[in-house]
Length: 233
Ligand code: T5A
Image (cartoon, rainbow, N blue to C red; front, side):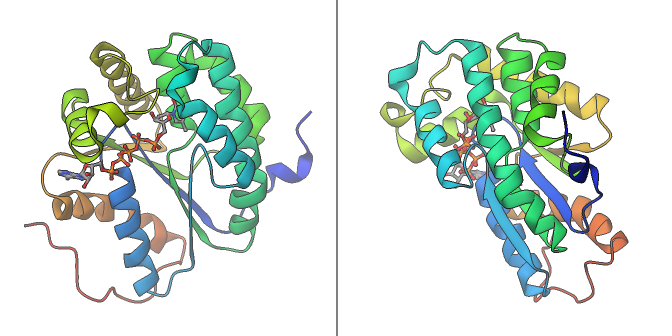
């Protein structure tokens, strides 16, 4: 049974960046965190799977190519286990203190990868994650959208084909399903916005800012102006 305290509305704002492999989440999360800090906003950055010592240990298991044979249900539950720990240890405490939490990936990754691309079904993944998070979803998730081939090329150029992790090493058809799953979530869930993530890093950052700024202003969390704007050109 869900603990009643978990249903309290937190004071901070929970933002996530998600999307297919190599969409630029980590690059953009860093820029966004710097921008917000330059405006005096208290930001906590974290990632999934990970963000806690237990979560990082689970991450190492999940991404290890030695476990290529893991069954989809075990995979889903391990992602959810890491998420349960990160929710209680990192996300809820930060939100209760009124901070902005910026997460590299979120529960939507489980919906797209395990629910849609692995074929477990979105409802099963939603139910399992209801237990893991007590129903906490990011206030806003930005899905950085790139064609699967573009993202995979970026990752293999950056790291080399031989250093792809277990999930990155899946075939292109799997990664195309992941993207389809994300785009479906973008159509169906009002908490999710699709942000085209092709083009220069600065252009993508400007698109992200256009989504994030009004949300933070509406919550009274942005009072200053950043040092130097994020131009669109
Ligand atoms: N997973 C995760 C699940 O299956 N279920 C779940 O529930 C969760 C939470 C996690 C893996 O686990 C899976 C998904 C993943 O396979 P991860 O590290 O979070 O792994 O995810 P990855 O997608 O593997 O992360 P990457 O670091 O590889 O990709 P990013 O963060 O999207 O991209 P980034 O910023 O590191 O950039 C990759 C390269 O592209 C360049 C960067 O410089 C870098 O070299 N780049 C650009 N190049 C050109 N134009 C741009 N606009 C660029 N932006 C970045």
